[in-house]
Image (tube, rainbow, N blue to C red):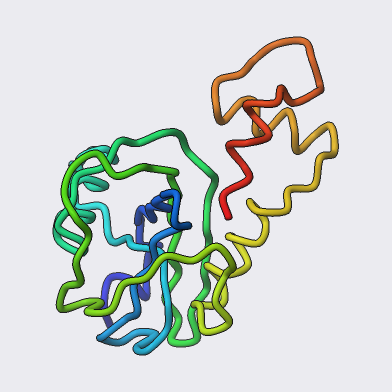
Length: 165
């Protein structure tokens, strides 16, 4: 039995925002072969999250990114028994022109979430696109972004951070 059937797998997903929309790749390999997905992958043992993000986007897209801020956690319980916990980050292209790889040869920009998107990633993208602005959720988002203050109202620039698509 593989280790990821015994313990959760720690990963990062990188939501890359551009003027054209968010950048997704179409999986060329299992799991989820043929489905659009957020670029991402496993955090290696003793690897920092920032290093993992840069390694993964270089491997999958041939680019360098600027990490903007964390978006939240994507948790997935897969049918084969694996449990994945992914830290999702918003990023923008700093250098290079995105290209496909052996994991996802086809890339595209989306202003709307494609139907053929990995289901748990689609759910996450919908959640950050249409956030529920309840006081507890707003406070959680403020904490994640480091906006700790007494106001329960999101500032205009904070609202834009969640208008990903």
